[in-house]
Image (cartoon, rainbow, N blue to C red; front, side, top):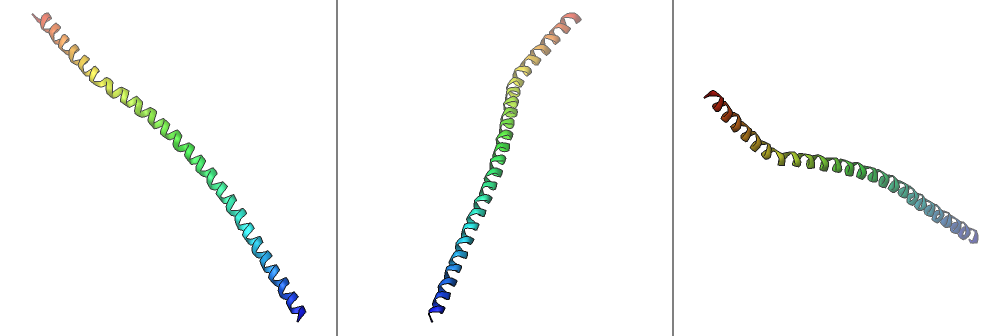
Length: 92
């Protein structure tokens, strides 16, 4: 009987050891996967920030252009009026 108890204890210890090794390998694998995902997310975040900066610059250029259009329209209207006036004066 004592032999059976020793064998049962050895079997239990082997089972516990195998379980511990399995848990450790799962933790290590999970940490590696998390590190890879973090690196990928960091790269994607950098790409997004670059694109956002470029878009912000383009919007700024567009806003500058859009604010100048009304000024140009007024200038064109004034020039058109001056040309019309000069044409009338030359025609008389």
